[in-house]
Amino acid sequence: MRRSVKVTAPLLASVALSMATGCRKPEMQRCVDENNRVADDKMCANLPAANAQLNPGGPGYIPYHPLYHYYYGGWGGYALGSVVGGGSYTPSAGRSYATRSGITTRGGFGRSMSAGHGAGE
Amino acid sequence: MRRIPIAPRDDWQQKVSSAGLVFHTPEDQEMDRPYWDESACYEFTAPEIDTLEAAGTTLQQMCLEAAEHIIDKKRYAELEIPAAAVPAIEWAWENEPPAIYGRFDIAFDGSGPPKLLEYNADTPTSLLEAAVIQWSWLEEQFPNCDQFNSIHERVIGKWQDIAQYLSKPVYFAGLDNPEDQLTLAYLCDTAQQAGLPTRSILMGDIGWNDERQAFVDLEEQQMFSIFKLYPWEMIVAEEFGPAALDTYTAMRWIEPIWKMLLSNKGLLPVLWELFPNHELLLESHFEGSAPKPRDYVRKPLHSREGANVTIVRNGATIASTDGSYQGPAVLQAQAPIAGFPDNLKPGASRYPVLGLWMVDQQCCGLGIRESSGLITDNLSSFVPHYFV
Image (cartoon, rainbow over all chains, first blue to last red; front, side):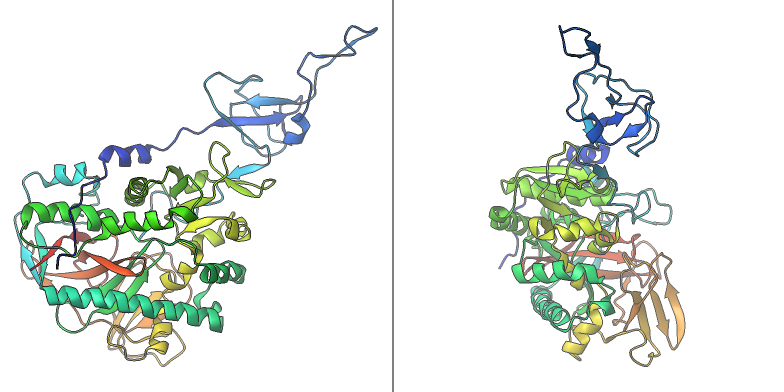
């Protein structure tokens, strides 16, 4: 009795190669204070837009400049209190961003094996 | 069982590459031949294949009994399984979340019964080579012979069986390493052929959102079904390990966490206790639990790919490998040496280890890796087979 049936080779080398090249990572979206230090995302939640006016049209309106902003891209990390730079206060079209919102952290898996080694056997 | 030198196909590199095996000839200077080595092959008789198939099926049943025993007797500490992982293991054992595959490593030379060396039940690789590459080789080189190999269709069938129990998409996660990525790409392909939507992610890119109590992908989408080519003993020990355990019942991790019990070398002495002198087993004991024999093979509980293995004969070490795996170990009797003349090095021998592939409870294929020494490590070659 045959124990096998015809197998159509299913895998293209391009599939393996595309996986090896990895995915493009989103850039960082961090809440920062007026000194460009990373703050908790809660500080940036529900803020009026920059330059909005409190009591608009009323007497003695106050231009509003929030102490906290979202900061898009650039260098540095997500660590609270760390300084950011190299990015901007506005997102760039066509790019994706990942926030600390909900405090998503990454890198908590995959560090037991030294670089370049596999985990299969 | 015979090892037969044959002429490789003229353009074999292109053929295996086009089927996905892009690392057929690693640049590692320590290897004296390609990883995919078709300058030789193994020939079996149909009764020998029957013997191997029956051995795989029997060993699977024995291993399930051993897992049940470890759980019932709570022998987790002997296997160095952390207490924090126990609730998830016991839940998974009771509820039988989806599992796909495993590979028994067997010593066999055609004479005497096959002997279990270990069970790679959690993160086996070399799947594409066994399922597809050697099948294509057979069709060209021995079209009138057969091969013990229904791995491909059984893996697809298994995905179809478990599809209803999985949230979609199914994520395929692993390290950025060619061998692992190839196995992942192949398994991802089989899942797609079974109709499942899939996505790929590196283990290091998996996010944990504490507020949502959720694992998320790079687009912050919650991940529910994850095939991970990454061992459970590492998962539970890493930063996100507690989160993986806390949320285990809401997730579908493949392979499931109870596979920790089988991929652990501590399985071997437990099997020997439950089935003493069974013809498919080699005598094994936890180190220190019995007088040290004169001849044995020492394997750390969590060692991988032949690392930190020591072979002792007449009380003296005759072979050993380096590695980073410390801690408790098992002492296993050495299998009868299965050596075959090396066609490329006159006077030398090649030592095969037979990988018996399990999909679900079915033993459905054979892949052979062989090496120049008694310890099969990550420098061994894959050699195809057929039977008559």
